[in-house]
Image (cartoon, rainbow, N blue to C red; front, side, top):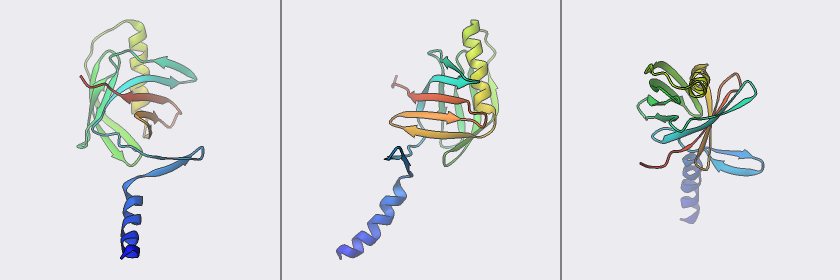
Length: 144
């Protein structure tokens, strides 16, 4: 009986998490959908940009994405396949903000919409990396 339970439970346990080894540690790849993410910052063209407090992102399980790019609200379609995310049909409001916020917003919009992104989660943090090497750093947003 014990062998039968092990034979059933081990494959189920392995199927429950998408584990990856990194620096000798094993971590479970956490979901990215259904979570309110706060954009912390962005690395693009070798420059680190700090996000305005308003910058947010949420991707729902049905493929709807929405948030704030730093000044303007946006919505989009998102396709999520494993650790790959692609945004399409992006729509934004057209408010004008101060230049630092607009600079960040343009860089974030470009990073999110330049091809497929690779998502990595670790302990409540999410990093999205595009094919150009731009990295968007996010953390779970505090509940309202």
